[in-house]
Length: 115
Length: 106
Image (cartoon, rainbow over all chains, first blue to last red):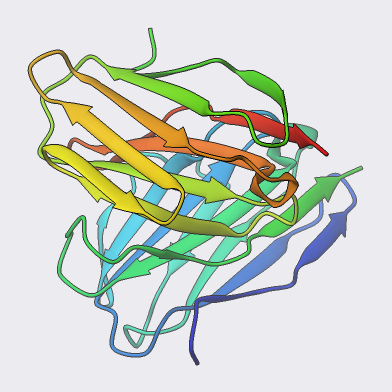
């Protein structure tokens, strides 16, 4: 597609439920990033993939968060046993070069609300 | 202390006013990004700067690497400029400021 596509656009989950958020990057983009954006805050880094390899997961807040990109294209961010503090917008971004600063394209995000 | 600080946090102005949003950072960087985020959440990259000044339409971005400071200016502001403007720097990973919420009143 022409841009980075994220789904679902909105997700309401009951506390304790598992959720899966999907990111479809721009075709051919090597790098893929996940960010968490709490209300009124700037995005915070979660994890980074170069192709299928997860090179940095230092931003994942707990072991309830898991991300994968098995074929180096679509990525899924999974949150197990969701908590209210997980409520945020989850943004995905992709870029062409490996870990480059150029050409970042962001998706519209998935707004997760845990009730 | 955040590595990236933006000011002001909120800015309301009348249509036509000249707007300035500031970004200061505390670490050495190779480049800085200005991003625009609309209420629906989508983020658009406006500028990437490593030195000097860039201009695109009514938007102007400047950076002073020695002073670790960048500014985003909007000339002849319009209500459609209303958005959150975010400064981001590349250290080991892209690090974002908390954003400036701009509201332009007709």
